[in-house]
Image 1 (cartoon, rainbow, N blue to C red):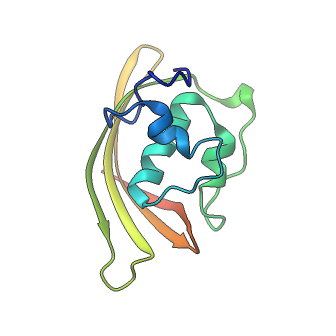
Image 2: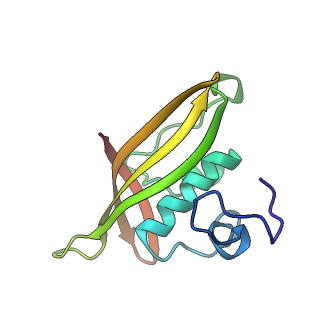
Length: 132
């Protein structure tokens, strides 16, 4: 997927890339919500933007960068956001449940995850998630 203004965003929002996740990936615009961050992280995976993925991963749980040779080629097929909820007691915490479809080596998979996010200052970070 290119960054052409008419290119539909891979997060399945039905918006074009530059008006959707493109505002956050490679720019200094922070995602305004945990859902927006989760969608932009999905798109970053489709574009193989490891710098953005790592920068939006909370330092307490962030993995080390991978060598390009160690990466498995993944073809991302689609994203469905099932729910997005803020913690009522702590507005700086949220969960996003999603299903991402992908293929590796021609075989299809689904990743169903309930992800936890935290906001520090104006920035949302992915913390971790539970696979369903």
